[in-house]
Image (tube, rainbow, N blue to C red):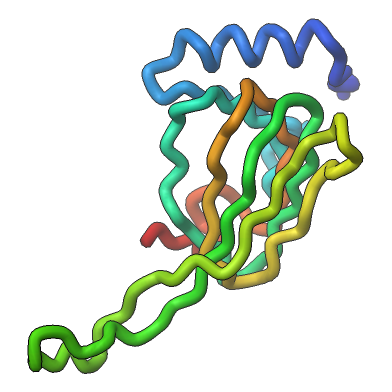
Length: 145
């Protein structure tokens, strides 16, 4: 088993890869075994990347910002209101409920998104986050809006 060193070179390399990626982001798997049932990764994010609104119904998500600046945005589901005298009964929409600015230069290092809460990020500066959640990728029940 080899140790993974998270240092300036790794962070700068990830930011460089994210900049040249069509998605404007690049992740780096921090698991040390295929038997590891959780998700732990570094994620380099560039301004303009689009992270779909999503949620993790079986796990919270811990986010720590190593460098950069971004906004974590939380949403809740609400019923679609009646418009133009037509009932949209049963339809749901998302309503923004909170914005948290993450910026290590002012002491805002991260957050923990609660289980089942819809969320996304808006990247303000090239950023690298550490994120962790329970369950194997693709098998953890995560949902996109």
